[in-house]
Image (tube, rainbow, N blue to C red):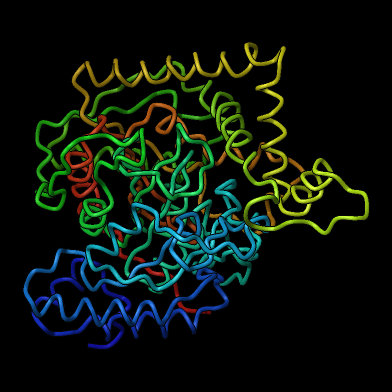
Length: 495
């Protein structure tokens, strides 16, 4: 078998079980693809020695006949996950040289299941961004191009390296994290599947924190079946994370029947934004028709507080970030600025943070500190928290009325060019999250499924939002949508 790196998780798992291929062969195929793809800047810390060592161990385990589904499958790990002895920088200068002495719970669970870590993936600094342009490693680049245009496109953010690597077949799948859309938006931009599970489904322990009440890890994969396989391994209760839910993890793959007869799918009228491209509007209507043809009932619903979601998110997330990022002070780990004679501790903090944090992180820390300050706490932060409760209640009311899932666009546009949304107006960049942030504010599961191409040949995704803790049902609805959409487009290789 050639081009082993082009396999999905399920195909590769089945080939491993049959003995048609070994994990070492799969891993070597991916390592070669990674070495040939430096132009994408997706992998920022390569770990070939660890990969081959784990692949050999996985082959032995498969021979023994007790291997779980993820055993022997080569994946990439987002740089936000702490990995023992391997640089874990969250794409920030301030964590330069940081090699943790511990492993994040999610990456440990994947390793315990026999998954093979190929290396660490590029991302926006501290997961703050929608285009992977805030990374200390430089921009991650999408493997897609517009028609015959050579302009480099964003793979989305913050999990841009993960998206680019999976779409370009550098790995079979990758981990991502999603605080306001950072799995679903990049997945939509590069034509892959990305699921953000219910808040609390995956442990956050050992994942560098951005906004603790919103962050959630999830898989980025080549299709829905692969997402189900990888998600099951990533989920589970963890006593080290107080927000982790003590719930049994079902066999998500076994729930993929494709049968959605009688399911009620809601179409929220508030997501019909002014200025939405006609192509997105058309794809959304086609998606609803596909689900209807598969036996689902399509109903119009209202989520009245949607218009307040972005402002609420951009108060809550920076507030939590400013609190979480206070630990980066140059004292205990990471980078410390060079100090002048007579500099005290205050100067050390100031110089270290000025050097170590990029502009977007500085902007959000300052916004967060402002909304938490005396005199503004009630006006901004507490008000945003109350709005969040109303947004959550909108969803609860819809689900209580019998709706099983909600269909929306995943992004307001296809991927844009790197540098096209400049720093001049950060709000333009923030608008990328318009369809995704509500899901994080309400703690719900959401999945992006590739469903079509725009007129320039770029992928467009549709988002399905599910009931809390019902990822299996959500994945099954996504599976039906995936089957109906029949999306198989791949980027032409230019790198």
